[in-house]
Length: 193
Image 1 (cartoon, helix red, strand yellow):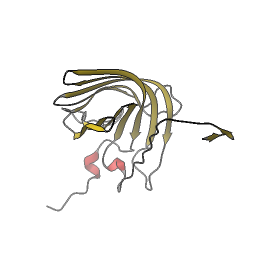
Image 2 (cartoon, rainbow, N blue to C red):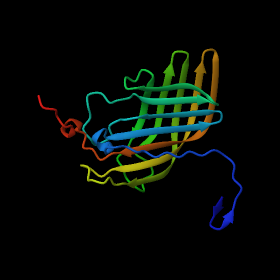
Image 3 (cartoon, rainbow, N blue to C red):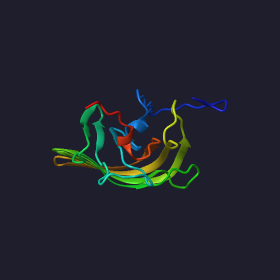
Image 4 (tube, one colour):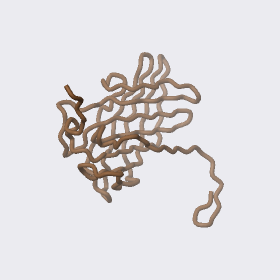
């Protein structure tokens, strides 16, 4: 790798994603939260949609989402669960988007991922704002959309049958406020009766 004209030998793992949709995300959800924990041989990915602060909320927030847990080359969990039974974002501090703030839109989180015979508990303590920025769609949403990432420390406990693994590692907690006003029903196209 070359940085500012100086060559460095680097060894490690990397991660890259691109969120590509055929529709603007604000037509689907007000906010998206994402957690990525990488600690060899473990890979833990989970995400949820939860209403951000300051917007209209339903009677009960969505706490379910999706989860992927892998140890080495063995997938232990891959599920989407809107009920919150198997994927449960138990707690998260949510803040309004403010570029340059000391805390990001998502700050700290407790997440529980499970299936029969497997329980993964991640307690995430945010330590540093990586970035918080506005972004744009090809059209104008009702509100300004924001995207942010925070570096965090994850305390992870994995129980699989009688086996118990614990570790601490750095991770990334990501947030996207999509630009929706909180009234999703008004944006849906109704079919003729």
